[in-house]
Image 1 (cartoon, rainbow, N blue to C red):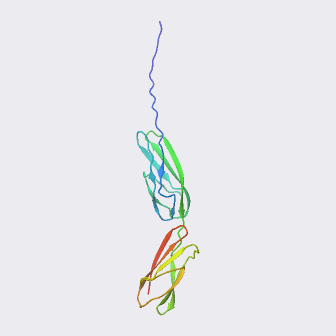
Image 2: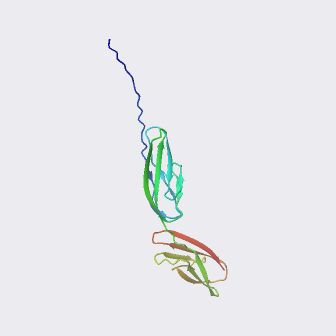
Image 3: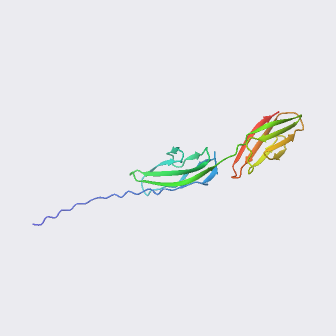
Amino acid sequence: VTCIARDTISITENSIPAVAFYLGKDTFCEGTSMEFVNLSNIPSGNLSYIWTFGNGDSSRNESPFYTYTHPGKYYVHLIATSSAGCTSMITDSVTSLIIDSSAFSSLFEGGRREGFTAHEKDTTAHYVWDFGDGNLASGNTSYHEYAADGTYKVTLVVINANGCTSTTTNMVT
């Protein structure tokens, strides 16, 4: 007598998530809200996500918006986990560029003549003054003679060498 035993073993192979993300620009000005577009996928099942932004902040959103408030280079990690518990990660770097301050002070000159000076003086930046009466000027310090007494909205726009822009508006009388 010969005995034969048979058994069937079922093996389930769980897929590893294919993790990827897209960012329109990897270099941007600080304070710019950026969308991190998640391109991750898996053949079957669902994925959950953890994003870390390289500065202690994180998100569980699929495609989060995030704003870096300080300049620097940051390493962004996207971790995708399948419903079966399989995990995959991708890392990429982003750079948040510094924005020059556009804060300024008025230098009263007497009469209707007014002077203005930027608090920061960056020799590589471009300064544009709008004196609130239709006249413009450039330079980190500028002077203007108003045609009439009154209150004017003076605006300084600073564009630094990275192309980052800062704007400040003050009322002057």
